[in-house]
Image (cartoon, rainbow, N blue to C red; front, top):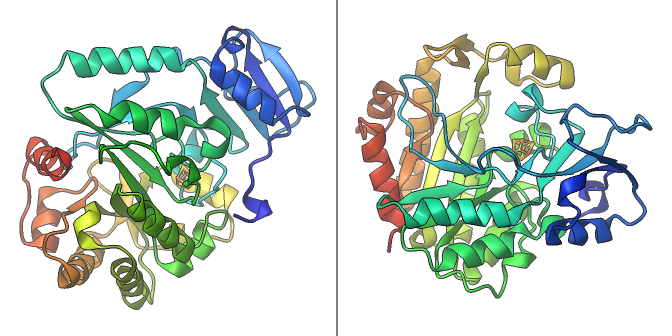
Length: 360
Ligand code: SF4
C-alpha cells in the first residue's frame, strides 16, 4: 500500500469510559503523537477544539452492535446482519452513502468489544436460525485492520460457530492479519469490484482492481472462502467491455469452487443524497446518468439499463462456472426474472440459498 492511502488522523477524540479497554491501548500506542481530546461522549459531528478535521473517535457502542440490514421496500433482501464495530472510512468513494450522514473526515472505532462478544453469544446461542454477519456496512471491513486488529478476533470467534458466518467486505489489501488464523472456513473475505475505469475515477483512494484481486488470491491461498460484490455497477459507454474484462480477470485469478457468492447491484441512492454527491465530488459523472426515483424513493437507473447490466454479468459469470451463486442486491422480483430468468421470489428463499452456500 502506498503512503497516500495510509490513514493518519490529525487528532483523537476519546470517550472517558473506554480508556481501560485493551483496544484503546493498542490504538493509542499507534498514534502517540496525536493531539487528543477526552470527552464524556463523542458526537460524530464533534470537531476537536483545535478545529482539526481529520479526527479519529474512540468510543463506546451504546446501541446494539448487531442489526438486521433494513433492506429496501418492495425489493428482495438477503436478510443479512450488520455488525457495527466502526463507522466512517478513508477510501472516499464518490458514491459512498456514508457521506450523507457522517462527516467524511471522521472515523469512529468502537472499543467495548467485550460487550460485542457478549451480545453475539446471546444472539447465536439462543437461536436456531443461521446468521450471515458482516462488518462492512458503515465502514470498510479491513481498511483499518492494521490499526484496530478487529479481523483476527472476529475470525477466531466465528471459527467454531455452527450457526453463523462472518463476512469481511473490503476494497483494501489489508489482509496480513488474516494469515495463519484458524478460521475453519467460517469467514468469507469479500472484495467490492468495479470496472477498472470506475475504480480509478470513483474509488480513487482504494487499491486498483488488480491489487484487490491479488489480495483475494492471497486470501484464497490461506484457505478462506471468497465473495465478490460488483456494486454499485455504473452505466457508461464502455461498460460492457470494461466489466467483461474484470469478470475475465476475476476468473483467471480465483478458483470458482472457492467463491461463496457474487452479488450485483446498480448505482442507487436516496433522492436527497444527489446534491451531497454533487457538492462533494463536482467532477463525477455518476449522478448525470439516466437515474429516476424508484418505488423505494431511491434514484436508480431506468429498469431496462439495470437488466442489461445484470443479465450481461450473469451470462459472463456463467460462462466460467454455473456453480457460482450470483444474486442481486436490493432488486425487485421482476428485475430478477428479466435479468437471470428466475427469481427467489421472497427474502427467506434468497437467504436460505445464501446460507446453504456456507453452512457446511
Ligand atoms: S469503501 Fe465503502 S465505506 Fe469506504 S468510502 Fe468506499 S463505499 Fe464508503
